Figure 1 (cartoon, rainbow, N blue to C red):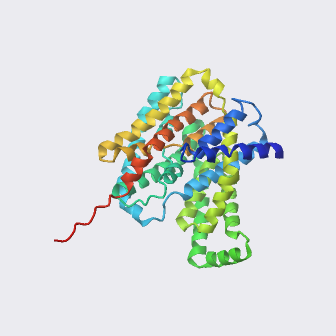
Figure 2 (cartoon, rainbow, N blue to C red):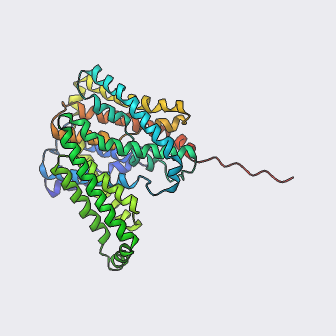
Figure 3 (tube, rainbow, N blue to C red):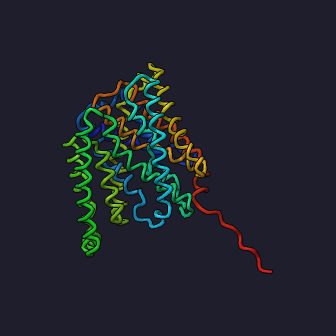
Length: 384
C-alpha cells in the first residue's frame, strides 16, 4: 500500500458519484464496486485486496458505512409509533417466509448456507431506502409502517448474520453479539446523560467556537472501541458500526457532527471499502460458474418474491417490493464469509449480484414509492 495507490483509489472512486447523477441514477456504491472490480482480481489486478493496510482501511470504511446506516434509522421520530404494530408484524412475516425459500435455494444449489440465504432474503436496507426517498416527508400510515418494517428487518438481520454465516461457532458469535449490545447500551446511557444534563451542549459550543470537533472524536473513540470488542470476539464490524449508529440516532445526532461523519465516511473511507471489496471479487470465477450467476439471480428475485407477498396484507406493491432492498447485509456476508474462508470463489459475488437485482428494482420503483409514502393533497372545495 502506497500513497500512489491511495491516490488512485480516491481518483477512480469519483466514478461512483458521477454515475449517481440524474442522467444515470446508479447508486454510488455500485460505481465504487465497479471500479474495484476493474482494478482488482477480475480486471487489471492493480489493487491487491490481500494487502493488510488496504484491508484494514476497508474495515474502517465498513464500520463507518454501517454507522451512517444506523443513524438513518428514525429512532426518535414519534410518528414511527403509529406504524410499529403492522410494521413489526410484516417484518416478522417476511422472516418466516424467507426460511423455506432460503433453505429451498440452498437445497437447489447443493450447499449448506440455507439459513444465511434466509437472512439475506429477509433483510432490508434503511441506508439505501431512506436516501432514495429524496427528502419526501413520510406522513401516511402505510409509509410509517413501511419505515418501521425496514428498520426492524435491517436491525434484526444484522444481528442474525454472524450466527447464520458460521453456525458451527454460533455460540461464540452470540456471546460477541451480547457483548457488543451491552457496550453499546453503556455508551447510550453516557451520551443520553450528557444530553439531558446539558454537558453535550456545553462541549458542542466550545468545540464549534474553537474548531475542535470534540463530539466527532468522542463518537469515533466509542465506535472503534466497540469495533475492537467485536473483532476480539469474532463478530463482524458490521454489527458494531450499526449498533453505534443506532445509539447516536437514539440520543439525537447533532447536525454538525452528522456532516463531519458523513464527510469522513462518504468522502474517504467508504469509497476505499467498496473499492477494496470490489477488488476482492473475482467475476472471472463467476463467469466460469454459471451456477453462481443463477444463485445470485435466485437470491435477488427470491427477495423480491418474499417481500412482495406482503402486498396481500394490504401494503402497496411498490412499498412491499422496496422493502426487499438489500445492501449492508449482503456486503457484510460477502466480506465476513471471505475472511472466514467458508465460500467458494463465486459465492460472494453471487450474493452481491442478488443485492444488485434488488437495487435495480428500488431504482425503478422510486417514484411510485415516494408517491405511496406521502398522502395525496386533495384540493379544497369552493364554498357555495
